[in-house]
Image (cartoon, rainbow, N blue to C red):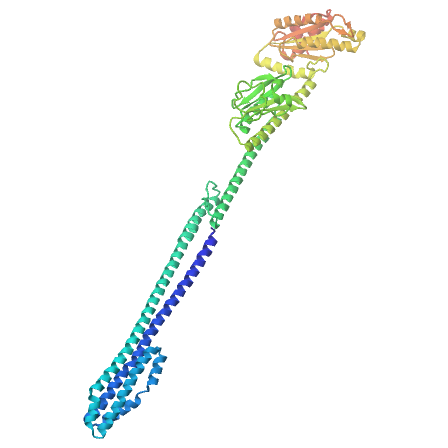
Length: 601
């Protein structure tokens, strides 16, 4: 029940009890007034009847005094008092007005009549005394009959007073009892009113208002201080306090939700800052190794609940090779073909988990104990890598969706950076490679030669340089056309490109001239490898439009450091040796001499 309803009921009950108490008090006051009126009436009756018997005796005494002594003063007093007496009707009228009933008045009327009879006898006795008949006068006033009449008057007056006393006592007793009852009821009403007031004070003000308000005040104070750990008390009653408690609970829930949103916003801001920093670092990467290091450092901070791996597609082997991992993932292999991952097959995120029916990727090893997420890295519709994650703890749907958004943003940034690196490498290769043979061009050679010279001098390691020129190359162009010449150049370039275990040390300088750098090769090792290359070129059989182009030979000039002078002049020395080889009949290997190494460039 609501406090306003309780208060209204209590107020109404208090008013009713107060009115009832006032009414009983009025009734009690009326009973007391009736009691006082009965007592006053009794006093009035006593006053009106008390003189009747005295008057009879006074007149008798004055009459007897005159008869005995003959003193006329007694006669004067007797006549004065007799004249002062009122008639019977006058006396009865006053008593009737005072409230005497008819029976009482009849008794009194009879007493007065007997009193008047005595007065007549007194007059007779006085007249007899005045006439000198004292004996008769004395017989009348002192006789037995006169005495009996006096007693009869006294008895009748006593009966009248008894009747008055009885009635008055009954009225006084009734009024007293009634007043006592109404006073008792009034006291009970006052007690009930006081008890109700105390109950209202205790149960409503203290129990239902004061205690809950004190508890709610403490909670409100803590909530105002952003202490949302304060739990509002549970007041199930449907009243204003319950409404306040419900409002405070709603305020706390809103505060918790706002706090949760602020925390999520802070986490989101932190994550976006990390992603922004990572993106900036990725944009500054010059190589795949730099990109891998950035991913390895930043990804655990962005996805602390998702161990994983970064795979990069190896075009030559058509395999996904692990570039790095974080937080110790357990299930995925280090390398696998692209067809072993459903994400790479479909070009979409693949995440079999929970009760969803789906197919696990083939690159997962053993039982799939934890949910996995595979996110392909693509550029222009081609898969260039893969981000693999393992979910290590349970998350609700909302947190999981948010985490997956971060993973997708992460994958998008990494994929874009990897694609940019590949594009940059492709452009660099295009700028540094010969379009016809696929070998590095003169620009690439200059950069590579400078780096190898620095490394050789720093490590005191040998370095050899082999200059190659195709013999009578103009003959192929003149006899078979430029397409045939291009075919010869491609064939010779392929031999030189595969002549060393490491790739990237054979270059086309221009026209039919090539150069091969051999870091770590002594003069003897370089000479032996040059002989192998010479023989492989001799063994070439190139066809053009179904026609064999004929034998292909080349002239070679070989120089080595430190055998042939300064390392910076190694190319010049080898070129001088090549000129000698061509001048002395071609199809031969000419090793530079010390004197050639000292020739001015």
